[in-house]
Amino acid sequence: MTAPAAERIRVWREDPVSFVRDNFGVEPDAWQVDMLRAVPTNNRLVASACKGPGKTAVLAWIGWNFLATRPHCKVPCTSITGDNLADGLWTEFAKWQGRSPFLRKAFQWTKTRIVAKDHPETWWASARAWAKDADPSAQANTLAGLHEDYLLFLIDEVSEIPDGVVAAAEAALTGGIETKLVMAGNPTRTEGPLWRAVGADRHLWHVTRINGDPDDPKRSPRIDIDEARKQIAKHGRDSYVVRVNILGLFPERQADKLLDVVDVERAVERAAPEGTSSSDARILGLDVARFGDDASYLAPRQGRVAWRGREFRGLDTVELAEQLIRSIDKWQADAAFVDGTGVGGGVIDHCRHRGYGHVVHEVQFGARAMDPDMYQDRRTEMHWRLAEWVKGQGCLPQDQMLADELAAPRYWFDKKGRVVLEQKVDIKARMGRSPDRADAYALTFAGTVMPSRAAAAQAASASASRAAVDYDPFGNR
Image 1: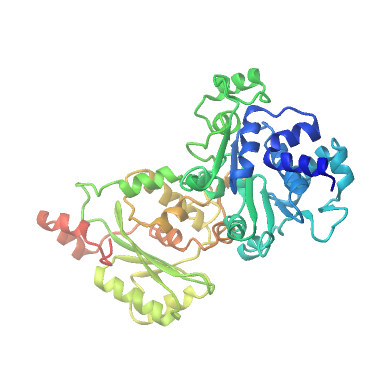
Image 2: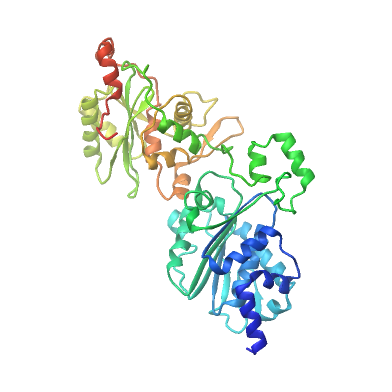
């Protein structure tokens, strides 16, 4: 490399803005300048953007800058689907290469890889995706196992990316001479990698926010200001459409979620009301593990109060049934609803054999709903009732795993207008674990339960009433 060429590479490495100007002949927007200038000094960068400000172009600029200025580097790229990656970020790479004689001469673009012509085996970018039916482990492997002195991960549409994919990229940041993770997305969900990067984990990230707010002088000029005003007038500034698409803000409530983070937090903070009566039935819900990495979970609820439950691992059906029986006896439970799918049937059979058939009731998640015109199946119906309870006057225990699971499921309507809840396997794929706790509490809404005569008699005593509602059946609240 000649001295002038080496000096040019050094300048581009330290100043990606000059790289964009010199190679592509464009002047970046103000927010694009800020993000580009942050690249040399930060190893985690995230852009949370409204719709259409040019965020994918910036990812491509950063990718080309890294390829052009770091020797024998690797730039793995991904997005929510293979088609989205091909039509979005990977097309942007091709578009901007076409504007640069230098990049066309030095690199070869194909549908899945970009390689340095002089060193194609060791100097490249690659388009990576996972199969639609991939489990969390296979998803994480999309960006796992990569190690290099110079390594840059680019993730587009990160709001929808599984947590394991981002975690695999972050794990690689501890090695090499220069390793970076750059991601961008629209703030569509109050969960997931984008939500955490600009929120709880903000101290780890250089965060760039982009909006098209007509009243903000720092707005993106690429968003049509007249159309933005029309959308605000039509839907209101607090609507999901305007907050996400125009203002670049996370929604106050996700349009397709039974429960949002705020709903769950309020239920956790809500104190047990003075008026709660011990005459409310004591109900247990048991979600039985069906896979090796899942756990069985036993959840207790009495009226407006739910207590922290118990998790069981490695128990056979007889042992789990005996644990349930002990809890029924200790708490004098009026009913226990058990997930009877798969091995759950064995738990129910043992409880019936032991004389607890009048208390233990089988529930099939996939069975016909009690209101079949409203819900697709029994599981959807139970979760809907649970959500109404949480948003109403329900009191939840302090349990972060439960909180995350309650705020995870999505729902939609089928052609018959019935509510359809996201499948458990799909939730597990996104979260990296099965939502066993949420399902256990949902089971406590499987049916209407009348309290036993003994409990009703006890409730007649005013002095016993308050003590009964404050009683934690498992002693861990």
